Length: 517
Image (cartoon, rainbow, N blue to C red; front, side, top):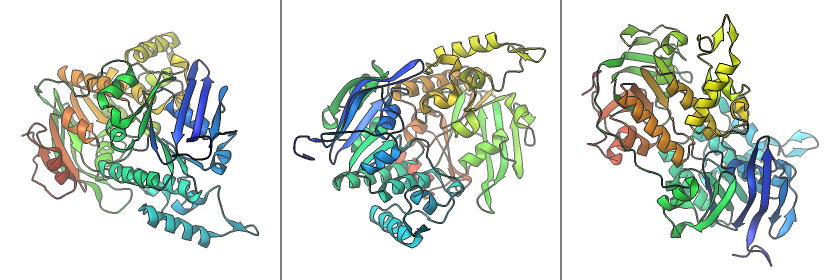
Protein backbone atom coordinates (compact mmCIF):
# COMPACT_ATOMS: atom_id res chain seq x y z
CA UNK A 1 0.00 0.00 0.00
CA UNK A 2 2.97 2.32 -0.55
CA UNK A 3 2.19 5.97 -1.23
CA UNK A 4 5.70 6.89 -2.27
CA UNK A 5 9.11 5.32 -1.98
CA UNK A 6 10.13 5.21 1.66
CA UNK A 7 6.79 5.72 3.44
CA UNK A 8 3.81 3.36 3.65
CA UNK A 9 1.76 6.19 5.18
CA UNK A 10 -0.04 9.05 3.43
CA UNK A 11 -0.23 11.02 6.73
CA UNK A 12 1.83 10.69 9.90
CA UNK A 13 1.27 12.74 13.03
CA UNK A 14 4.34 12.10 15.18
CA UNK A 15 4.60 12.87 18.93
CA UNK A 16 1.95 15.61 18.81
CA UNK A 17 1.47 17.63 22.00
CA UNK A 18 -1.20 20.36 22.24
CA UNK A 19 -1.98 22.33 25.40
CA UNK A 20 -4.78 24.71 26.44
CA UNK A 21 -5.12 26.61 29.73
CA UNK A 22 -5.26 24.01 32.48
CA UNK A 23 -5.28 20.96 30.18
CA UNK A 24 -2.95 18.96 27.95
CA UNK A 25 -5.44 17.92 25.26
CA UNK A 26 -2.90 15.86 23.26
CA UNK A 27 0.05 14.33 25.10
CA UNK A 28 2.73 12.89 22.78
CA UNK A 29 0.29 11.24 20.33
CA UNK A 30 1.37 9.39 17.18
CA UNK A 31 -1.17 8.53 14.45
CA UNK A 32 -0.38 6.98 11.06
CA UNK A 33 -2.82 6.79 8.14
CA UNK A 34 -2.39 4.45 5.14
CA UNK A 35 -3.60 5.31 1.66
CA UNK A 36 -7.09 3.99 0.94
CA UNK A 37 -7.92 3.01 4.51
CA UNK A 38 -10.69 4.05 6.88
CA UNK A 39 -8.92 4.73 10.17
CA UNK A 40 -11.18 5.25 13.19
CA UNK A 41 -10.17 7.49 16.09
CA UNK A 42 -11.90 6.38 19.28
CA UNK A 43 -11.95 7.90 22.76
CA UNK A 44 -14.11 9.28 25.55
CA UNK A 45 -15.56 12.79 25.46
CA UNK A 46 -12.64 15.17 25.91
CA UNK A 47 -10.01 12.49 25.10
CA UNK A 48 -8.43 14.85 22.54
CA UNK A 49 -9.75 13.40 19.26
CA UNK A 50 -11.18 16.62 17.77
CA UNK A 51 -8.15 18.58 18.98
CA UNK A 52 -5.79 16.16 17.20
CA UNK A 53 -7.77 16.45 13.96
CA UNK A 54 -7.91 20.25 14.32
CA UNK A 55 -4.09 20.21 14.49
CA UNK A 56 -4.01 18.21 11.24
CA UNK A 57 -6.45 20.64 9.61
CA UNK A 58 -4.41 23.68 10.68
CA UNK A 59 -6.93 25.11 13.16
CA UNK A 60 -4.41 24.64 16.03
CA UNK A 61 -0.62 24.68 16.16
CA UNK A 62 0.98 21.93 18.31
CA UNK A 63 3.56 22.74 20.99
CA UNK A 64 5.58 19.67 19.96
CA UNK A 65 5.66 17.08 17.21
CA UNK A 66 5.59 17.03 13.41
CA UNK A 67 3.26 16.10 10.57
CA UNK A 68 4.41 14.23 7.46
CA UNK A 69 2.66 13.66 4.16
CA UNK A 70 4.01 10.78 2.09
CA UNK A 71 7.10 10.73 4.32
CA UNK A 72 7.93 14.43 3.97
CA UNK A 73 7.59 16.92 6.83
CA UNK A 74 4.88 19.54 6.16
CA UNK A 75 3.87 22.70 8.04
CA UNK A 76 0.12 23.32 8.29
CA UNK A 77 -0.41 26.87 9.55
CA UNK A 78 -4.11 27.16 8.65
CA UNK A 79 -6.96 25.31 6.87
CA UNK A 80 -5.87 26.76 3.52
CA UNK A 81 -2.53 24.96 3.91
CA UNK A 82 -4.43 21.77 4.76
CA UNK A 83 -6.64 22.15 1.67
CA UNK A 84 -3.55 22.68 -0.52
CA UNK A 85 -2.22 19.35 0.83
CA UNK A 86 -5.52 17.63 -0.04
CA UNK A 87 -6.81 17.47 3.55
CA UNK A 88 -10.51 18.21 4.15
CA UNK A 89 -12.62 18.10 7.31
CA UNK A 90 -16.31 17.69 8.14
CA UNK A 91 -16.66 19.25 11.60
CA UNK A 92 -18.90 17.95 14.40
CA UNK A 93 -20.68 21.32 14.47
CA UNK A 94 -21.01 22.31 10.84
CA UNK A 95 -19.20 25.37 9.52
CA UNK A 96 -21.95 26.67 7.25
CA UNK A 97 -23.49 30.11 6.64
CA UNK A 98 -27.21 29.66 7.42
CA UNK A 99 -28.50 32.44 5.15
CA UNK A 100 -26.43 31.37 2.11
CA UNK A 101 -27.60 28.76 -0.39
CA UNK A 102 -26.14 25.27 -0.53
CA UNK A 103 -24.24 26.18 -3.70
CA UNK A 104 -22.75 29.34 -2.18
CA UNK A 105 -21.59 27.39 0.90
CA UNK A 106 -19.87 24.74 -1.21
CA UNK A 107 -17.78 27.21 -3.25
CA UNK A 108 -17.18 29.71 -0.42
CA UNK A 109 -13.44 30.30 -0.10
CA UNK A 110 -12.66 28.26 -3.24
CA UNK A 111 -14.44 30.38 -5.84
CA UNK A 112 -13.50 30.06 -9.52
CA UNK A 113 -13.07 33.56 -10.95
CA UNK A 114 -12.22 35.03 -14.34
CA UNK A 115 -11.08 38.66 -14.42
CA UNK A 116 -12.61 39.15 -10.97
CA UNK A 117 -16.01 37.65 -11.86
CA UNK A 118 -17.43 34.48 -10.31
CA UNK A 119 -17.67 31.55 -12.74
CA UNK A 120 -20.87 30.14 -11.27
CA UNK A 121 -21.87 27.97 -14.23
CA UNK A 122 -18.60 26.02 -14.22
CA UNK A 123 -18.68 25.68 -10.42
CA UNK A 124 -22.30 24.48 -10.48
CA UNK A 125 -21.51 21.92 -13.19
CA UNK A 126 -18.63 20.54 -11.12
CA UNK A 127 -20.80 20.33 -7.97
CA UNK A 128 -23.60 18.58 -9.89
CA UNK A 129 -21.14 16.03 -11.30
CA UNK A 130 -19.67 15.29 -7.86
CA UNK A 131 -23.15 15.08 -6.35
CA UNK A 132 -24.26 12.57 -8.99
CA UNK A 133 -21.06 10.50 -8.83
CA UNK A 134 -21.27 9.95 -5.05
CA UNK A 135 -25.05 9.87 -4.68
CA UNK A 136 -25.04 13.02 -2.52
CA UNK A 137 -28.14 14.68 -3.90
CA UNK A 138 -29.09 18.01 -2.32
CA UNK A 139 -31.03 21.09 -3.50
CA UNK A 140 -28.26 23.52 -4.50
CA UNK A 141 -30.58 26.54 -4.36
CA UNK A 142 -32.02 25.87 -0.88
CA UNK A 143 -30.84 27.99 2.03
CA UNK A 144 -28.91 26.12 4.74
CA UNK A 145 -31.36 27.26 7.45
CA UNK A 146 -34.19 25.45 5.63
CA UNK A 147 -32.61 22.00 5.18
CA UNK A 148 -32.22 19.09 7.61
CA UNK A 149 -29.01 18.38 9.49
CA UNK A 150 -28.49 15.27 7.33
CA UNK A 151 -28.58 17.46 4.22
CA UNK A 152 -26.26 19.99 5.88
CA UNK A 153 -23.75 17.21 6.40
CA UNK A 154 -23.94 16.34 2.70
CA UNK A 155 -23.10 19.97 1.98
CA UNK A 156 -19.99 19.68 4.19
CA UNK A 157 -18.92 16.51 2.35
CA UNK A 158 -19.51 18.18 -1.03
CA UNK A 159 -17.37 21.12 0.17
CA UNK A 160 -14.47 18.69 0.71
CA UNK A 161 -14.93 16.91 -2.60
CA UNK A 162 -15.25 20.21 -4.49
CA UNK A 163 -11.76 21.10 -3.24
CA UNK A 164 -10.40 17.77 -4.58
CA UNK A 165 -9.37 16.57 -1.10
CA UNK A 166 -8.09 12.99 -0.89
CA UNK A 167 -7.52 12.87 2.89
CA UNK A 168 -10.94 13.20 4.51
CA UNK A 169 -11.52 13.85 8.23
CA UNK A 170 -15.01 13.08 9.59
CA UNK A 171 -15.51 14.43 13.13
CA UNK A 172 -18.48 12.63 14.76
CA UNK A 173 -20.24 12.49 11.39
CA UNK A 174 -23.20 10.38 12.54
CA UNK A 175 -24.05 12.24 15.78
CA UNK A 176 -26.99 14.07 14.18
CA UNK A 177 -28.07 11.52 11.55
CA UNK A 178 -30.97 9.08 11.33
CA UNK A 179 -30.24 5.33 11.02
CA UNK A 180 -30.97 5.47 7.28
CA UNK A 181 -28.65 8.45 6.76
CA UNK A 182 -25.94 6.67 8.76
CA UNK A 183 -26.15 3.63 6.44
CA UNK A 184 -25.88 5.94 3.41
CA UNK A 185 -22.86 7.73 4.90
CA UNK A 186 -21.10 4.43 5.68
CA UNK A 187 -21.61 3.29 2.07
CA UNK A 188 -20.28 6.65 0.83
CA UNK A 189 -17.17 6.35 3.03
CA UNK A 190 -16.47 2.84 1.75
CA UNK A 191 -16.80 4.18 -1.80
CA UNK A 192 -14.25 6.93 -1.06
CA UNK A 193 -11.77 4.39 0.36
CA UNK A 194 -12.21 2.03 -2.61
CA UNK A 195 -11.32 4.97 -4.83
CA UNK A 196 -8.03 5.51 -2.97
CA UNK A 197 -9.09 8.33 -0.67
CA UNK A 198 -7.87 8.01 2.94
CA UNK A 199 -10.32 8.61 5.78
CA UNK A 200 -9.88 9.56 9.44
CA UNK A 201 -13.14 8.89 11.22
CA UNK A 202 -13.83 10.19 14.77
CA UNK A 203 -16.69 8.39 16.48
CA UNK A 204 -17.92 6.99 19.80
CA UNK A 205 -20.13 4.39 18.13
CA UNK A 206 -18.57 0.96 18.31
CA UNK A 207 -21.04 -0.55 15.80
CA UNK A 208 -19.89 1.92 13.14
CA UNK A 209 -16.22 1.24 13.83
CA UNK A 210 -16.76 -2.51 13.45
CA UNK A 211 -18.78 -1.94 10.24
CA UNK A 212 -16.49 0.34 8.23
CA UNK A 213 -13.02 0.85 9.68
CA UNK A 214 -9.81 -1.00 8.78
CA UNK A 215 -7.87 0.09 11.87
CA UNK A 216 -8.69 1.86 15.15
CA UNK A 217 -6.51 4.19 17.22
CA UNK A 218 -7.69 4.70 20.80
CA UNK A 219 -7.01 7.81 22.92
CA UNK A 220 -7.71 8.20 26.64
CA UNK A 221 -7.41 11.47 28.58
CA UNK A 222 -5.18 12.98 25.90
CA UNK A 223 -2.80 10.02 25.70
CA UNK A 224 -2.28 7.33 23.04
CA UNK A 225 -3.54 3.91 24.18
CA UNK A 226 -2.93 1.81 21.06
CA UNK A 227 -3.81 0.99 17.44
CA UNK A 228 -5.53 -2.27 16.51
CA UNK A 229 -6.77 -3.96 13.31
CA UNK A 230 -10.58 -3.88 13.41
CA UNK A 231 -10.90 -7.47 12.23
CA UNK A 232 -8.84 -8.63 15.23
CA UNK A 233 -10.89 -6.88 17.94
CA UNK A 234 -14.46 -6.60 19.27
CA UNK A 235 -16.74 -3.98 20.86
CA UNK A 236 -16.04 -5.02 24.45
CA UNK A 237 -12.25 -4.86 23.98
CA UNK A 238 -12.49 -1.44 22.32
CA UNK A 239 -14.72 -0.05 25.08
CA UNK A 240 -12.24 -1.34 27.70
CA UNK A 241 -9.36 0.38 25.86
CA UNK A 242 -11.38 3.59 25.61
CA UNK A 243 -12.68 3.86 29.18
CA UNK A 244 -10.00 1.86 31.01
CA UNK A 245 -12.53 -0.47 32.65
CA UNK A 246 -15.20 -2.99 31.60
CA UNK A 247 -18.34 -1.18 30.40
CA UNK A 248 -21.86 -2.58 30.52
CA UNK A 249 -23.11 -2.20 26.96
CA UNK A 250 -26.70 -3.27 27.84
CA UNK A 251 -29.10 -1.17 29.96
CA UNK A 252 -29.94 -2.97 33.21
CA UNK A 253 -33.35 -2.09 34.63
CA UNK A 254 -36.24 -3.70 36.44
CA UNK A 255 -39.79 -3.64 34.97
CA UNK A 256 -41.54 -0.27 35.27
CA UNK A 257 -44.06 0.39 38.01
CA UNK A 258 -46.14 3.27 36.59
CA UNK A 259 -48.23 5.44 38.89
CA UNK A 260 -50.39 8.53 38.30
CA UNK A 261 -50.50 10.39 34.99
CA UNK A 262 -48.00 13.29 35.04
CA UNK A 263 -48.26 14.48 31.42
CA UNK A 264 -51.43 14.24 29.37
CA UNK A 265 -51.53 15.42 25.75
CA UNK A 266 -54.88 15.60 23.92
CA UNK A 267 -55.21 16.44 20.21
CA UNK A 268 -52.08 18.61 20.15
CA UNK A 269 -51.33 20.47 16.92
CA UNK A 270 -48.15 22.47 16.29
CA UNK A 271 -47.66 24.47 13.07
CA UNK A 272 -44.66 23.86 10.81
CA UNK A 273 -42.12 26.60 10.13
CA UNK A 274 -41.32 25.11 6.70
CA UNK A 275 -44.76 24.50 5.13
CA UNK A 276 -48.43 25.36 5.64
CA UNK A 277 -49.65 22.10 7.18
CA UNK A 278 -49.14 21.20 10.84
CA UNK A 279 -45.85 19.57 11.83
CA UNK A 280 -47.70 17.90 14.74
CA UNK A 281 -51.23 16.86 13.90
CA UNK A 282 -53.81 15.79 16.50
CA UNK A 283 -51.38 13.94 18.77
CA UNK A 284 -52.61 12.35 22.02
CA UNK A 285 -50.66 10.34 24.61
CA UNK A 286 -49.82 10.27 28.30
CA UNK A 287 -46.74 9.68 30.47
CA UNK A 288 -47.09 8.35 34.00
CA UNK A 289 -44.79 8.59 36.98
CA UNK A 290 -42.30 5.72 37.11
CA UNK A 291 -42.11 5.04 33.37
CA UNK A 292 -39.97 5.97 30.37
CA UNK A 293 -42.05 6.63 27.26
CA UNK A 294 -40.04 7.01 24.08
CA UNK A 295 -41.04 8.90 20.95
CA UNK A 296 -39.33 7.09 18.08
CA UNK A 297 -39.25 8.05 14.42
CA UNK A 298 -37.09 9.12 11.53
CA UNK A 299 -35.84 12.68 11.99
CA UNK A 300 -38.17 15.33 10.58
CA UNK A 301 -41.48 13.62 11.38
CA UNK A 302 -42.61 16.18 13.95
CA UNK A 303 -40.66 15.08 17.03
CA UNK A 304 -38.83 18.40 17.31
CA UNK A 305 -42.02 20.44 16.98
CA UNK A 306 -43.81 18.16 19.47
CA UNK A 307 -41.12 18.89 22.07
CA UNK A 308 -41.26 22.62 21.23
CA UNK A 309 -45.05 22.52 21.74
CA UNK A 310 -44.72 20.75 25.11
CA UNK A 311 -41.92 22.96 26.45
CA UNK A 312 -43.34 26.25 25.14
CA UNK A 313 -40.61 26.97 22.58
CA UNK A 314 -43.35 27.04 19.90
CA UNK A 315 -47.02 28.00 20.27
CA UNK A 316 -49.49 25.17 19.63
CA UNK A 317 -52.54 25.89 17.49
CA UNK A 318 -54.87 23.26 18.93
CA UNK A 319 -55.21 20.65 21.63
CA UNK A 320 -54.53 20.52 25.35
CA UNK A 321 -51.42 19.80 27.42
CA UNK A 322 -51.88 18.95 31.11
CA UNK A 323 -48.89 18.68 33.47
CA UNK A 324 -49.38 17.52 37.08
CA UNK A 325 -53.12 18.21 36.74
CA UNK A 326 -52.72 21.80 35.44
CA UNK A 327 -53.56 22.96 31.92
CA UNK A 328 -50.30 24.44 30.57
CA UNK A 329 -51.36 24.74 26.90
CA UNK A 330 -50.93 28.53 26.99
CA UNK A 331 -48.43 28.76 29.85
CA UNK A 332 -45.03 30.47 29.57
CA UNK A 333 -41.77 28.48 29.38
CA UNK A 334 -40.96 29.53 32.96
CA UNK A 335 -44.33 28.33 34.28
CA UNK A 336 -43.92 24.98 32.53
CA UNK A 337 -40.40 24.72 33.94
CA UNK A 338 -41.77 24.61 37.48
CA UNK A 339 -42.62 20.93 36.93
CA UNK A 340 -40.59 20.07 33.82
CA UNK A 341 -36.90 19.57 33.04
CA UNK A 342 -35.83 19.74 29.38
CA UNK A 343 -32.68 18.24 27.86
CA UNK A 344 -32.90 19.94 24.44
CA UNK A 345 -32.08 18.54 21.01
CA UNK A 346 -29.79 21.44 20.05
CA UNK A 347 -27.36 21.95 22.92
CA UNK A 348 -25.90 25.13 21.44
CA UNK A 349 -29.16 26.83 20.53
CA UNK A 350 -31.34 25.88 23.52
CA UNK A 351 -29.10 24.18 26.07
CA UNK A 352 -26.24 26.54 26.87
CA UNK A 353 -25.15 30.15 26.72
CA UNK A 354 -21.83 29.33 25.05
CA UNK A 355 -19.95 32.43 26.20
CA UNK A 356 -20.99 31.97 29.84
CA UNK A 357 -18.86 29.92 32.22
CA UNK A 358 -19.82 26.39 33.16
CA UNK A 359 -21.00 27.49 36.63
CA UNK A 360 -23.22 30.21 35.14
CA UNK A 361 -24.77 27.62 32.82
CA UNK A 362 -25.37 25.22 35.72
CA UNK A 363 -27.71 27.74 37.45
CA UNK A 364 -29.36 29.23 34.34
CA UNK A 365 -32.90 28.52 35.55
CA UNK A 366 -32.14 28.65 39.27
CA UNK A 367 -30.03 31.76 39.92
CA UNK A 368 -33.02 33.55 41.49
CA UNK A 369 -33.60 30.84 44.12
CA UNK A 370 -32.66 31.75 47.74
CA UNK A 371 -29.84 29.19 47.59
CA UNK A 372 -28.06 31.24 44.89
CA UNK A 373 -29.05 34.89 45.55
CA UNK A 374 -29.71 37.32 48.36
CA UNK A 375 -31.61 40.58 47.77
CA UNK A 376 -30.93 40.33 44.03
CA UNK A 377 -27.19 39.67 44.34
CA UNK A 378 -25.75 36.34 43.17
CA UNK A 379 -24.04 34.28 45.90
CA UNK A 380 -20.95 33.39 43.85
CA UNK A 381 -19.54 30.96 46.40
CA UNK A 382 -22.80 28.98 46.52
CA UNK A 383 -22.94 28.85 42.71
CA UNK A 384 -19.31 27.65 42.54
CA UNK A 385 -19.90 24.98 45.20
CA UNK A 386 -23.01 23.70 43.44
CA UNK A 387 -21.32 23.65 40.03
CA UNK A 388 -18.22 21.87 41.39
CA UNK A 389 -20.41 19.16 42.93
CA UNK A 390 -22.31 18.54 39.66
CA UNK A 391 -19.07 18.51 37.64
CA UNK A 392 -17.65 15.84 39.93
CA UNK A 393 -20.84 13.76 40.05
CA UNK A 394 -21.30 13.70 36.26
CA UNK A 395 -17.58 13.62 35.34
CA UNK A 396 -17.83 16.80 33.24
CA UNK A 397 -14.31 17.35 31.90
CA UNK A 398 -13.03 20.82 31.16
CA UNK A 399 -9.75 22.73 31.30
CA UNK A 400 -10.57 25.01 34.24
CA UNK A 401 -13.54 23.39 35.98
CA UNK A 402 -16.41 25.69 36.91
CA UNK A 403 -14.82 28.79 35.36
CA UNK A 404 -14.34 27.14 31.93
CA UNK A 405 -16.19 28.96 29.15
CA UNK A 406 -18.82 26.51 27.81
CA UNK A 407 -17.83 27.16 24.18
CA UNK A 408 -14.34 25.75 24.74
CA UNK A 409 -15.55 22.35 25.98
CA UNK A 410 -15.97 19.21 23.86
CA UNK A 411 -19.51 18.53 22.59
CA UNK A 412 -19.88 15.47 24.79
CA UNK A 413 -18.93 17.35 27.95
CA UNK A 414 -21.32 20.18 27.06
CA UNK A 415 -24.03 17.52 26.84
CA UNK A 416 -23.07 16.04 30.22
CA UNK A 417 -23.29 19.51 31.80
CA UNK A 418 -26.84 20.02 30.47
CA UNK A 419 -27.96 16.58 31.68
CA UNK A 420 -26.42 17.21 35.13
CA UNK A 421 -28.28 20.53 35.43
CA UNK A 422 -31.65 19.25 34.20
CA UNK A 423 -31.73 16.00 36.19
CA UNK A 424 -30.62 17.82 39.36
CA UNK A 425 -33.51 20.31 39.04
CA UNK A 426 -35.64 17.42 40.37
CA UNK A 427 -38.87 18.02 38.42
CA UNK A 428 -41.83 15.64 37.98
CA UNK A 429 -41.32 15.33 34.19
CA UNK A 430 -38.02 15.03 32.34
CA UNK A 431 -38.21 15.65 28.58
CA UNK A 432 -34.97 14.16 27.25
CA UNK A 433 -34.30 14.74 23.55
CA UNK A 434 -31.34 12.76 22.16
CA UNK A 435 -29.77 12.76 25.65
CA UNK A 436 -26.76 10.61 24.69
CA UNK A 437 -26.01 12.23 21.33
CA UNK A 438 -22.25 12.54 20.93
CA UNK A 439 -21.47 10.70 24.17
CA UNK A 440 -18.98 7.84 24.59
CA UNK A 441 -19.98 4.38 25.87
CA UNK A 442 -18.88 5.14 29.45
CA UNK A 443 -20.96 8.34 29.56
CA UNK A 444 -23.94 6.64 27.85
CA UNK A 445 -23.83 3.88 30.47
CA UNK A 446 -23.90 6.53 33.23
CA UNK A 447 -26.68 8.68 31.67
CA UNK A 448 -28.89 5.65 30.98
CA UNK A 449 -28.35 4.62 34.61
CA UNK A 450 -29.35 8.12 35.79
CA UNK A 451 -32.55 8.14 33.71
CA UNK A 452 -33.54 4.68 34.98
CA UNK A 453 -32.79 5.81 38.57
CA UNK A 454 -35.00 8.90 38.07
CA UNK A 455 -37.77 6.67 36.71
CA UNK A 456 -37.45 4.44 39.78
CA UNK A 457 -37.72 7.55 42.00
CA UNK A 458 -41.16 8.14 40.47
CA UNK A 459 -40.30 10.65 37.73
CA UNK A 460 -42.14 10.60 34.40
CA UNK A 461 -39.65 10.53 31.53
CA UNK A 462 -40.45 11.41 27.92
CA UNK A 463 -37.50 10.31 25.80
CA UNK A 464 -37.07 11.33 22.15
CA UNK A 465 -34.37 9.33 20.41
CA UNK A 466 -33.23 8.45 16.90
CA UNK A 467 -30.97 5.66 18.23
CA UNK A 468 -32.89 2.41 17.76
CA UNK A 469 -30.75 0.55 20.30
CA UNK A 470 -31.46 3.25 22.88
CA UNK A 471 -35.19 3.20 22.08
CA UNK A 472 -35.38 -0.59 22.49
CA UNK A 473 -33.26 -0.89 25.63
CA UNK A 474 -34.28 2.20 27.64
CA UNK A 475 -38.01 2.66 27.05
CA UNK A 476 -40.97 1.03 28.82
CA UNK A 477 -43.36 2.08 26.03
CA UNK A 478 -42.59 3.23 22.48
CA UNK A 479 -44.74 5.71 20.54
CA UNK A 480 -43.82 5.96 16.85
CA UNK A 481 -44.24 9.27 15.02
CA UNK A 482 -44.66 9.46 11.26
CA UNK A 483 -45.53 12.64 9.35
CA UNK A 484 -46.66 14.46 12.48
CA UNK A 485 -48.91 11.71 13.84
CA UNK A 486 -48.48 8.84 16.30
CA UNK A 487 -48.91 5.70 14.19
CA UNK A 488 -48.07 2.99 16.71
CA UNK A 489 -47.71 2.19 20.38
CA UNK A 490 -45.31 -0.70 21.02
CA UNK A 491 -43.99 -2.68 23.96
CA UNK A 492 -40.18 -2.95 23.57
CA UNK A 493 -40.29 -6.46 25.08
CA UNK A 494 -42.88 -7.62 22.51
CA UNK A 495 -41.52 -5.98 19.33
CA UNK A 496 -38.44 -6.16 17.09
CA UNK A 497 -36.22 -3.54 15.48
CA UNK A 498 -37.55 -4.51 12.05
CA UNK A 499 -41.20 -4.05 13.15
CA UNK A 500 -40.28 -0.71 14.69
CA UNK A 501 -38.62 0.24 11.38
CA UNK A 502 -41.86 -0.51 9.46
CA UNK A 503 -43.82 1.88 11.70
CA UNK A 504 -41.08 4.53 11.38
CA UNK A 505 -41.16 4.28 7.59
CA UNK A 506 -44.97 4.61 7.52
CA UNK A 507 -45.45 1.09 6.13
CA UNK A 508 -47.46 0.01 9.18
CA UNK A 509 -49.81 1.92 11.49
CA UNK A 510 -52.50 1.45 14.12
CA UNK A 511 -54.99 3.68 15.93
CA UNK A 512 -53.46 4.87 19.18
CA UNK A 513 -55.56 6.19 22.05
CA UNK A 514 -54.52 8.78 24.57
CA UNK A 515 -54.14 6.44 27.53
CA UNK A 516 -51.46 3.82 28.01
CA UNK A 517 -52.41 0.30 27.02
